[in-house]
Length: 453
Ligand code: ADP
Ligand code: MG
Image (tube, rainbow, N blue to C red; front, side, top):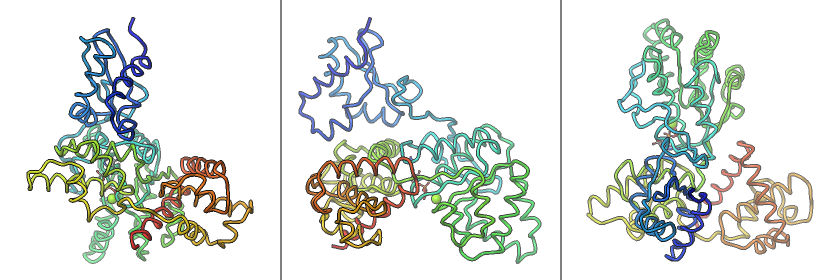
């Protein structure tokens, strides 16, 4: 009989703790590792995917293996498992559904990005629902969710998921008629069709698709009634024939003010799902994956540094990896923390800085359009309490002030009130994507104000 995973973990973690690894680094990379011991001479660790596995091989084997040997016996071998090799349900990042190595082309000639596959999409709390909906839709086109409406800010992975669905459908149904098209291209093609009197060909092309994916439909909002009308009829035609329609947008259907009501209501027929900004764990996993994929060697403290400074946009995380890789290649220098600070100095939107509590209080009142005096009073009016809780949450996220200090800044509230506020907002963010977006918007506006100072 081999000891249970928890017992082994405690022993190995005790050994690791004696190495005096910084607490933040320890908590992020080691504390929650799922250890197992399938036989007396093997300790295994299940990791979510190949990229993370490579990362641990590179950076942590040299520390983990000696610790495992001290804890479990000198002959013990350490094995990292990735993705489907890994059995731990705790790390059940969904494995790749379909792996496509070749560039895949749509029926309208657009070549899909070969990197935008489910396999390369890192799943976290911010995008789990959108990812699951995308996988389900690609598994059962026209049946699971129709239409599927994915929305979220710039650089959060909408196009990646849209193209991943196309790859997946193409791989399983080589004869399916698939079209991925940005809304802007749809508009341009339609305008050309009108000018060249080829509207019928245009209609036939889109109405004969089995899987129509239109990216960035907020582009339709831009006063293009004829085009919206055309898309509306295409939508109805495909939907009536149970063909799959997928759209992405930068806002939810309710906030698409310029779009015709009847099209907006069609968007709400199926499944509407948002993608939010990545949380820290997701940012770390994305950075590891992007670095591994590009062969850029990023030490753990550099990964942490980037994840702590680029918080709202995956495209920027990727940009940081590319930039570091390019500079390191050109200069022949290895990437370390000083090098990263130097190279990324201009591209960090939120370098660590101190935000002032009284400014956060003022901005909370302004953002929620309430008076400072009400915000600071003892009133329990719901809208004011909620604004105050958001303000306390922002102060907790963006400053290093204690709960007590935050409580006094918000009108002499005690630390339990602040703690309750933070927990409440965290729970609401998880439950309600609209609320999450509004809080993110507030945090972004605070950071932006601070940038100017
Ligand atoms: P959007 O369409 O929402 O503006 P994209 O899909 O173009 O964003 O994503 C921007 C970049 O970030 C792409 O290179 C994409 O591969 C990458 N990306 C976004 N989300 C993820 C994720 N969860 N895992 C891996 N890469 C991601
Ligand atoms: Mg996009």
